[in-house]
Image (cartoon, rainbow, N blue to C red):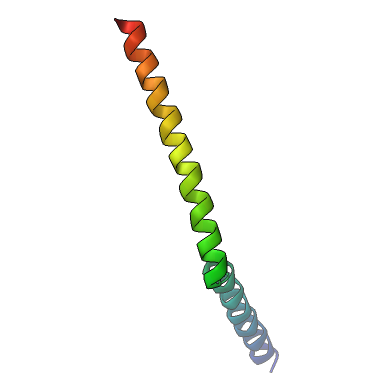
Length: 65
């Protein structure tokens, strides 16, 4: 009887741990509005980074000449 109780406790712990792990890796679903707002901001930030990187490359090329 003691072994059966230990086995049941271990099984419950394993199942609950599995659900917690799955939930932590699943992430929250995004709403359409949030996706649109986030994409536009990310796009602008990426464009700024690209411009800055291009300017740095131009400066490096000018310094080498």
